[in-house]
Length: 321
Image 1: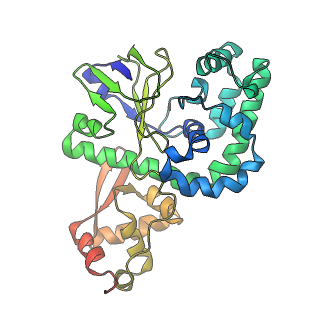
Image 2: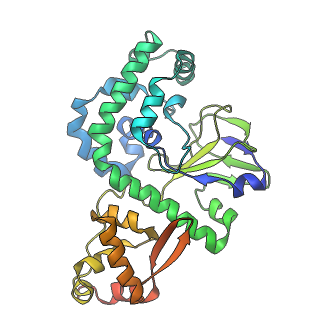
Image 3: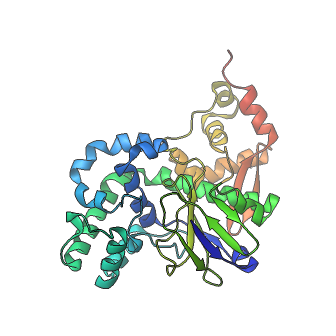
């Protein structure tokens, strides 16, 4: 368990974000122990034939027996959405002393063969392995993965406006508890430390790859907490709209209405449905004009969600039994 000392200001200024590299690195857990992540089974089955194209020895070596991964491969998001290429380029310039420190922390009794040798060569192999893995096994599925993560963040923003910041944060995971001056994040296999997070910029990060909560390996790292994302593992497109709803509204509008199972931006809706953002905006505005969706503003984003009238349409116009 980790305990972060905080002030109320640290909570009110905390941010949410997604690191593509962090999520890619954490996904290696599901390669190593797929049974621990049953919600990711469709993705794991889909990439199985592709694993012969990647450096699996190296990739699996990056996950320690306690599910930890090297600190330098788990960057805290510094912007709301990061770029994998940029993050990997930063990793490629990691100082040798940091590489050695983090790998020795991961394997205090001795590293596996893939991680032994001159740190410069080890780092080059890590970067190459992750680049191949990203392009082969993660990037083809990144759109729905990313949509899930941002759908979670969107839902948290809406929930915060309804019930307040602290109650919203307390709903992130049963593995997170909040005292007046501390956050406690529990993970049965994670490192254990107390750290001062005051004025250090706390970040909450949704992920598909933790059943509890995850956090940095050591107290000196910038503070962040990973929590289980809502809808994690939902890699397929949402189900088609009920047939009779499609006849009433048109197939596209009915399908978008079905997609809005939680508040989403038009960008997220477009990603989930595989259409352009402009097309999603046009249809969502129509649905809003007829009273089937409503909106709430979250910073620069406009979030759409279904009205009670829409719930009646979806429920009442399903296929007859």
